[in-house]
Image 1 (cartoon, rainbow, N blue to C red):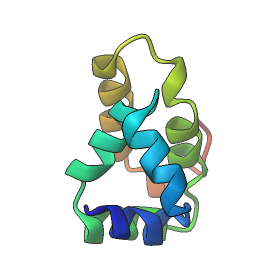
Image 2 (cartoon, rainbow, N blue to C red):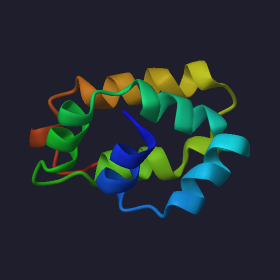
Image 3 (tube, rainbow, N blue to C red):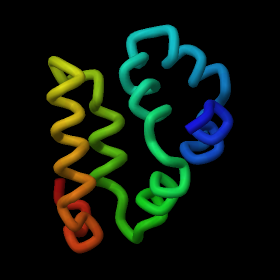
Image 4 (tube, rainbow, N blue to C red):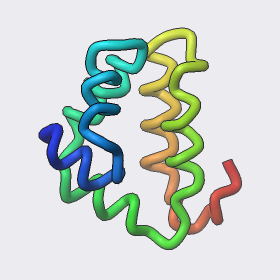
Length: 87
């Protein structure tokens, strides 16, 4: 995704995204850049996306990017639309 798409999708100010890109959330920003905009929009528009929001908000607590990617992948492929946000 582009910075404009991330801004639109997550409703995050441009300045915040620049801070993420240059600061301690650079890995999160890099991950967001690799996502397909349409697929990300579809995931966020599902009836319950609390599990994704929780995971993204707590990215900084992961000890490595690999651990974060593993958790994100498991969440995305888990049939999350039926989970009811239990994560």
